[in-house]
Each structure stands twice: as structure tokens, then as C-alpha cells.
Length: 564
DNA sequence: TCTGGGGTCCTTGGACTG
DNA sequence: TCTGCAGTCCAAGGACCC
Image 1 (spheres, rainbow, N blue to C red):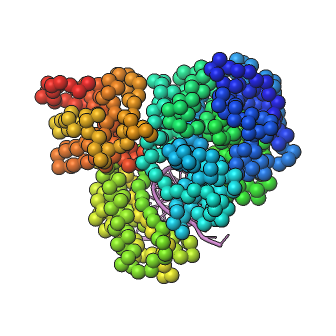
Image 2: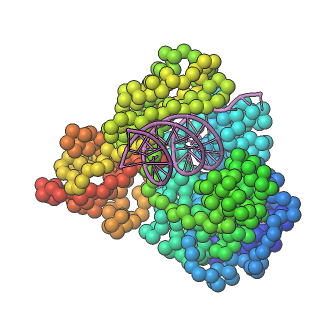
């Protein structure tokens, strides 16, 4: 790694130049804050060796890159991004944030005795896999999706823990709040999971290596460290693809910037698995074409890729290999399906037992559908046989009503289960609902009466209603979570911070319909009588719906006092 | 050796419809 | 009335992600 470096004014060690990846020079800007720079010096003999500390993924990545590396045509100077940044046109600035070994890191944070020791979070039953392994455990070859039994053989002295999702959700929510602060009014925030998110800062920057952006990201990482007690890897680039690749490239606890114009030269030496969407099957097919690196993929005729991978994957992968990814950062994404499934401790043959399990899981699905205010048109029963073969049977309900209750789901699923051959036993059974339609869909404004009345009811006011079913409202120390800084809502209106968070139990009664959202968080926003936005959030963040209604009711306009 | 749970998206092929 | 065709919907399965 040939680098120039210096302490930037935001208290970070800034390294710029060519990162040599198995012989191929890759221009990058790498920002290390003080704490990580210290770790780097103490853990590694040289900067060039620090990939060694990154665990299994780093080792896999190196194996996939051929020793001679692909052709490299980067015209940039070793001085790197800053010079180049001044010469190019403004482009998108996208961040990918990934909390390092998230579940295990939360456990180590909350249980000091586990710090510095191998920790494995996942299924602790005989049939289970690893959800997350701490980096100390990864050093022994334990990785995600590995069977728990295999992990125990590889690292028997690790602490094996069952997941504590409530703690993870609390930590994730706090990090997302910090990210929302980072994004600011012009930025877009797209959570992907509890531990990952994209942020689009295009509106506030001139490019990925804009100094203002980098200072803000360094400050964000410091807040994650001090306020949440976790570390985050951040990639910054001109697209989701480049941001994601950058954050994966040097985790954990690193900030890697790919300047505009450097996309192809950064991607070219990487193995094809570095591209999101390339798994074992696609990697194998590409190997059949003699393609093992992204550079080779970029040089492959797109028609050949389409013939092997299909139209969508072929064209998308070819574009990705060229560093092209136009996907926008989308702040609001509605879930498209809700499902529940379970692997039995031992294979089940008894039809009555299977039916009872199916009904129980239908109840779990129904709870989440109701909490999110949606119904589903298609019911799918999924099974895995004793020999691990998987199959699914689905049916779409006639008419537009769909299903939502446990009884409706179970009734639709029963004939699908009956069509499944359970001879020899099933090891897994699941039921899901897709083709979701919101209970609020198709209704015209204005909404009268009960909706707003319920929103204004004391039990729904933020800070007054955190019931047992509400979301976690405390930080990791049990103290009340801070409200985020005031920020304009959709209409540019700034409601009081104290009114923006709450565990609202929203009940809506337009006509005969009743929508309960008390199983999730009802996040109430508003700018006064006349407009109310309700964000329904289910038990999983993936299930969320937002609707805005104009409220046209003279009686309500006299509500005393308006909440905000 | 053993392989979770909850998702998304895509492809393929058949049925249906105009 | 029959056939061909294109478009759409649906079912099933595969691949991938975290």
C-alpha cells in the first residue's frame, strides 16, 4: 500500500494513494479515526497487513483475486482522491453503513466479560446456524450461516448465545437516528436491516470525497462509538454499489472512500463475489466462462452474460462490473410479504401436528399483518423435507378481500399443506402471505373523525403511552432515548421534537373497518390540524406504511389544544 | 458435517384473455 | 368457430441477501 497521509482537521488520519490489492493498484482515500489508527498500529506490523486482521472474508477475497491481477488502467496520481475530485463534475454521494459483527458486538458491549473473546450469536439448539460471530471467533473460522455444531467444533471455547432482538433493535434505532442526523434535510436514508443502511448525500456534497461529507461521516462514526458503544464500517461512493463494495472492502471499523472516476479501477481486481447479487451459483456459472474477477466480467460480452445468467442478472451484473448502478436510495419501502417458518427439533410426519404448527405460525403472521394494517392475497406454504429438498405451494385468494386473520390464513393454507408429500417427515414448515394490500389503500381523503381523535388522545401522545407493546424507548443504559434534533417533515414543517416519537396505539375506524397498530410503533407526525401523517411500523422494520390524510372536520379544527 | 429465519427478485412454464 | 399471437397472471423454484 503506497500512501500519502496526514491528520485531517476532523481528527482523522487520512490516507490517500494506491491500495495495492494483490499487485493491482487501487486509488482510494482511507480515513481512520484516532482510535482505529491506534488499533492499527498495535495490531499490525504494517498498514499493508491489516487486511489480515479482517477475518475470513478478507482471506476469501484474496483467494479469488488472481495473483497477476487484471489489467489496470487507472490514470490517477498516487496523490489520490483530492486532486481528482477537483477535476470532475459533481456526482452522487452515497454512503453504505454496516455495523461490524452487529449482534455479537452488542453482546460484548452489554457483557464486559465477553469483550475480546470469541462470541457466537445464533441458534443454540442442535439444529441451528450462526447468525453473527465476533471477529475473535472469526479468527477460528467461525462465520455466519455456519451450522452451530460445526462452529462448536471449530471454536468450542466461544460463548454461544441466543439472540436478544430487543437489544439489537434498540441499538439499531439509535444508530439510525444518528444516521438521520447525518443525512440531514436534503439527504435520504434507506435502512436495509438492523445493521445496514444507505444514505444519499448528493444534495449536500460535490462528490464522495467532499471534505464536508467526510468530516460528517467521521463525526458520525465517533458518535456511534461513544453513544452506542459499537463500531461501524462506512463506504462512500458515487452509487449504492460503490458504497457497498467500499464498506465491505476493509471492514471492520474502517471508512473507505471511492472517488468519482475511480470506480472501475477499484472494482477490476476484485473477485466477482464482491458484487452484491453474486453468490455461489452465479460465481460457478461465471467460472464456466473463465470469469473470476470483476475486471474480466466487465470485459465479457453482455450478450454472453445474458445467455448464461438470464436477462435481468446478465445486464445488471455487466453494468455493475463497469461501476454503473443507477438505483436510487429509497427512504420508504413497504414489505411485500410476511411469513413465519420453523425448523422442528426432529422431523414431523404426523399430519395433525403439522396442521397445528401451521395454525400457530398463521397466528404469528396475522399479528404482524394486523399491526401493519395490511391484508394479503396470496398464501404460500413452504416445507423442507427430511432430505432437505424444499418445496412451496401457493394459492391466490379469489376476490379482492385477501386474508389477514389467523383463521383466514390457516384456512387458505390447509389445502396447500395437504398437497405436500410429508412421507419421511418434514424438518421445516412455514406459511407466508404476499400480494399485500393496505387496509388504508383505496380510501379517499379527507378522513373524518375517529382517526384524528385517536391520534390526539392522551394515550397516543409521545412520552405518555409507552406500553408493554410499544417500541423500545430507552437507550442501552435504560435511560430515555433522546429525541432526534428537529428536522423538517415531508412538507418542510418542523414539529416539536417532543411530539415526534411515541409508542402510539393507533386505532382507526373508517366505517366498519378497524385497524389496530398497537403491536408496532405508531410514529405520529403532524403540522397541526389539517394534516396528519401516521407511520405504521410493524414488529420488523421492513413492515412499514405511511399515509398522509387531509383532515377536513370543523369540529377537529377546534381541538383544544392542538398537539402541535 | 449439517445446513435458521425472514425477506426480495428473477426465471420458467402454463393458463387465460382479447 | 378455430387458430395464432401477445400480454398478463399465477405457481413453483432458484438464487441471493442479512
